Image (cartoon, rainbow, N blue to C red):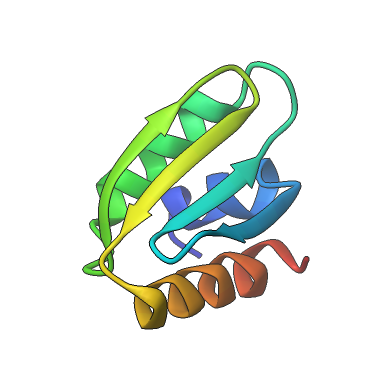
Length: 80
């Protein structure tokens, strides 16, 4: 597994859709930045941008279909 995929697998507690073009990722405290960098490095075509706090990441995605794909990909990696 790619190291950035491993970071997502290990760091994401829950992925949740929000609205039509946002995905919220919850991480343990202090991990959001590392996970967001991993998402950025993977350059998923559906992700337009990331904003990371301490334990929460907002992923802006292109549309509702992209949102479903990203949530599915994160769930597949993290097993959640």
